Image (tube, rainbow, N blue to C red):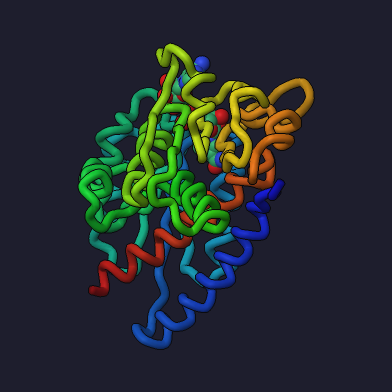
Length: 281
Ligand code: NAD
């Protein structure tokens, strides 16, 4: 069984990105810039943003965090996004979710210029991804995809089962696997026989938010299992996959923590660089 080391993979990716930033700097005399907007005081959001800032600086990107209190009005945020859209030193804009209730998430997402949408949430990027065109790809599924490709470079004809159909994870994951010629089944809370569907998968990606949902007898031998879930339980943080049981049958599996999580931020940096390159083009 291969334990997929997301920390190591993310560190390797950051090293590659660091080199790329240096090359871009010598070519364009400037570096890609990531601006994050953080609204409110939610502890997990503050931690994520701090980690994003630290990682961006580590690979040599220009990094900026704009903080607003929970009470900020929607217009102020939208105007700031428009200002950043027109700022040539900003390559990528990310508004940390979740937002306070009085701010319309969809409006915020659609105000970000698609070419600077490092999260890949803008409908233009969602459409481009599903049409097979160049686009920003949401960071977590992109990280999962890169981990899968490390284990199995040729995914042609593989049967992939995606558990969860969120816009953040399941749906873009499905598009990335389709692009690789996988036969993809997307499952969700109303799926009739989830165990039966999972048993058909050569690859399973679980992005649900239910602790240890995917059991050992749901997985056939030699399956690659990617666990996106992050669930706080009495025994600590666990994923959506029953790791102990599944690791006995899987060909490869990501641990939680230390699997998909570290790749998410590394992919945000990758997306910022990709946005910069597309803008230069
Ligand atoms: P979400 O709540 O938006 O979507 C969950 C999906 O799971 C839905 O499509 C729903 O239909 C499906 N679902 C719910 N119950 C189910 C069941 N019993 N059987 C099958 N499907 C079921 O969640 P999300 O934002 O996609 O996040 C999923 C998990 O991934 C969470 O634990 C979240 O914390 C984690 N997450 C991790 C990272 C990371 O970087 N590792 C990033 C984002 C989210």
